[in-house]
Length: 241
Ligand SMILES: [Zn+2]
Image 1 (cartoon, protein in one colour):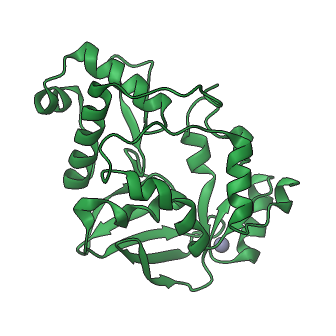
Image 2 (image 1 turned 90 degrees about the vertical axis):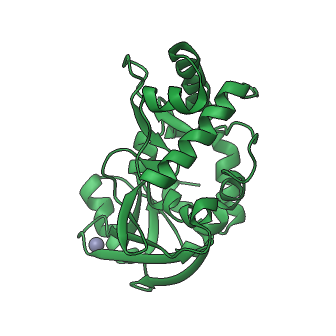
């Protein structure tokens, strides 16, 4: 259960691999396999696998650790598999975002500087379209104006094995009524995050990712996450908080 992981530092190999993954994903819209990582970094299979274990533990990416090829499922803010948010660059599909929350951080990545990043998603309950346009971290437009992000898992549940189910529970909804309809479909309550609150929630990591080569691991500390959401003014009463 990788919550409350004691502080650690990424190795030089892990930092090198992380930088390469970000550059590769921003360019091609998908993650690299072991050979691409080896050719770009000079690291051996064993060194790459060890680096991936560190990056997974430090909430940079999710690798399928039972696989021999260390299948890369996610590298936040990106997803290898079709997710609830499609990312368009220059009018063309580029990649899938990790989740609704991660999607608002994507336009801050240095290779996308100055570009319009269009997020095409949908309401979790009725699948009606939600379109968000951002540039350099700023919100340019959203359709509908009432769109919100719904989080239907509590931080105590995040990253209990990995963050796949956490990301799965962070979805766009058309408005609070649609959030309530979705909650009935999944038999769960959730909290609602406005886009400006989401921008602030991801601001620190967005300002670090690729901007600071050696920034350290992330940690899932549920009490600190709850405190952070409170500071943003998110109503946590649906989580009983
Ligand atoms: Zn809906």
